[in-house]
Image (cartoon, rainbow, N blue to C red; front, side, top):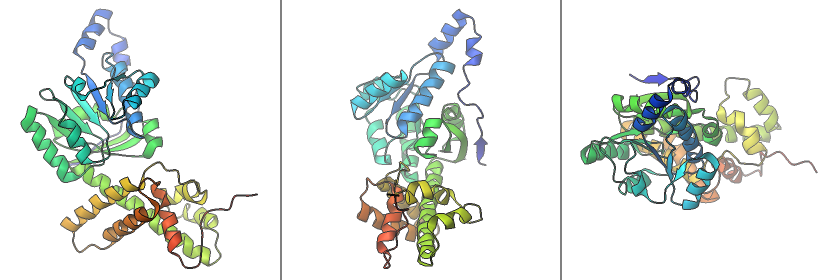
Length: 334
């Protein structure tokens, strides 16, 4: 069964250790786990900062070890947060727990192949990955070093990552997920074990294709209403107080009507996640038509706008297809 954890105050874990006598406190520090982190991108940099605070405050004082493909990012993170930057993956060899937050499952495989993992190391992958790849990684790590692998993608965007309010979808062996939970809780408002290896990735992919579908539907509906003379802001004022509202309609004024397109998630990554969801649907419910169509539209939007564009520019792609020249963005006052 799914297990839901709701950490109410995930960062307040230092108090029990603060009460320990100095000698006992130093013993806890000596026995505390060593944590490594790979991938200091838009999401990973914030997640790593939360993990570092948890490790230092509640786990005996060990700083988080951080590695990034661009060494300057690791150095900057160290300067900003007090983490320890390492310049080679070999330096993570003695870590008890290693977190990764990368772009694809292939990136995760490539990185792990270069880390001489210690026996029984726990690997927690925050990447929005492919379920089959995560299952294969879990099996290979067990064979390689008795390693434990947990897929733990997140939702909540850069704002949620910075605030420590992400939703984490966790997949893996129940005991391994339990071991990861206290760390995942340091940056999450809600943590749910969704099932065995790959289950977290599968839920994340479906979540993101629904996200894209909501944006596509909102854009099409608002364009149609504008054609009838209804201003998009007026329509959204109603919709966001009615049953048709969604996260996308609530953020539509700031992300789309403003012309900012500023959610902070790249279109190529959204296309990747929608593709994973479409693959799951093709395998499990091949008669489905809606999710495959969403994937097709997101692919077309990426081709038109570029993979590096914010994924909310999907709305611009739909604008470009309408034949009446309708545009949803609110004109800037002179």
